[in-house]
Length: 304
Image (tube, rainbow, N blue to C red; front, side, top):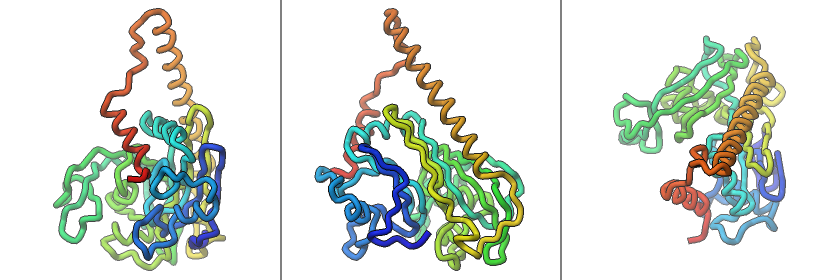
């Protein structure tokens, strides 16, 4: 994947309500800094000037976030109603996200569940970093869970590395980067969480590969092309395949389908109870706090 320019934005999915882009690495979603003229927002405005929403500050509403250094699938809502339907999927934990990464060393276990709580690092000089619970200066750590599946063992520029699929089951800032560092396998090229030592690779090797958002009216499901192939980067040399990427993604698809079917059955049951004069316990009204969070989320890109 080449560096981002104003006119090389790759589109993975497009409908009347959503666009999913393949975000470039080392690219901000937006910026108010005058010198940062190239952002994902500017790429979108260049490619789709007619789709920019004048009621928002930047022009486009993002359904979720990706770090500056992370590439891959990112969903954009083209109107407020679409943004609301996407928000509902995130709130009800129906969204599936999975990332590809190259991590330092050879991970011995084929699958891992990582459960370190993560908080903000308040240590002087590290105020933009996160940390695991128990670290000096770790403020307000919250429970976090990530799933790791080993795909291949190999080397990068002669050093041992492992290609993995990572699934964040919670959504803390820098969660995957912090969790990989915490288990002793920091992501290749992650300068911030490698004690500021890993500066040689041209990018951080973290890529949002798979995204599934079942909005009810449409199923958004994409895979952003794998950038961690020898044909794309000759420094990466795979040596042993542990699990095929296609098989692991199919597992995620099957789980997503099952969860959606269970949610639909719960809604039907709630409707039957209401129709029979029951309390409708399966259907819970949105609280004022939840509604306020939704409104704040929808207004995130609105003009002040």
